[in-house]
Amino acid sequence: MKKKIALVAMCIFLLTGCTKNFTVTNEEEQTQKTYVSNILCKPESKEMLEVYENNTESLKEVGVDFNKLPQCKNFKVNSGGYEGLWTSLFVKPLSWVLIKVANIVKSHGFAIIIVGFLLRALLLPMSIKSSKMSENMNKAQRDLNRIETKYRGRDDQDSMMAKSQEMMMIYKKYNINPMSSCLFSFIQLPLFFAFLEAVYRVPAFFENSFLGVFNLGVTPLEGLRVGNYWYLILIVLILGATYFSFKNMNSTSGDIAQQQQMKMMSTFMVVFIGIASFSLQTSIALYWIVSNGFTIVQNLIVKKGKM
Image (cartoon, rainbow, N blue to C red; front, side):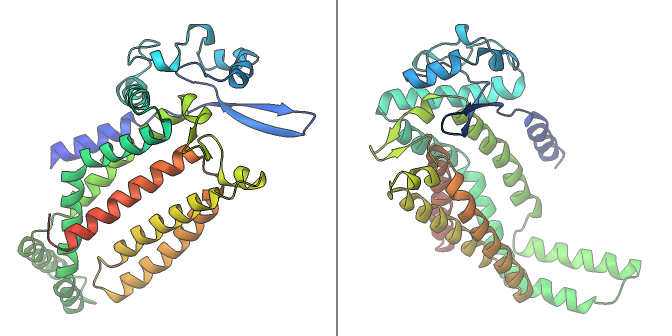
């Protein structure tokens, strides 16, 4: 248990990185656009190169020398030297993997999908265990409810100790480890943020297109404004992946009150994410869809007892 707690603490401690931005104002069009200032490599397009060459001071403010940055296709794990544990151990290696996969498959969009899938596959043993814990908790819910009813209104120390012992026996009977699912969540969180930062800090992932229809650096809202209604597909996929992911979560509890609470929370989250999806860049939307889709399929297989 101590080792697990130490691992979780280390993950939280390492979660200290973040992307930094600068804003460029177009006075003629009266618009503003935000760009990442602590990029790891140089942009490829002429338009983006011009933007960054005109804003080298913004990069220097965050310790980035634009002239010393490598081309994205030539980026290495040690490019730029040591930049702290978070960037050097998580962000840069993930950026390097993303770039290498993009060079192999000749598509930055497919690179995000493939690496996102590989990350979930890497966590598969732990996520399966977490899913099984949820299933076991569902099976044990009736016994746990019985214990709650038995000791309702009994707050003395002896009753509380007896209640804890009976609950521990139920956990043992159904092979439940409450810390297991929590540990998976804490380990998954740093990887999720590292992946997002790795994508954001590589300009190539916002300059290229996916399937010749979706610009990886464009949000659905921006795409719809110029009449590209293909971006509606992204919104539908994001909503679908989010809805079915939360729907599966709702079904893991046998307690009616908990199911109602989870249903309210999931409805709120689906609506919230649906609104947010209009401002989500295509590159990040692809990872969200793949990650949630992987989880949905995995949980369906676990439910059928094939894992």
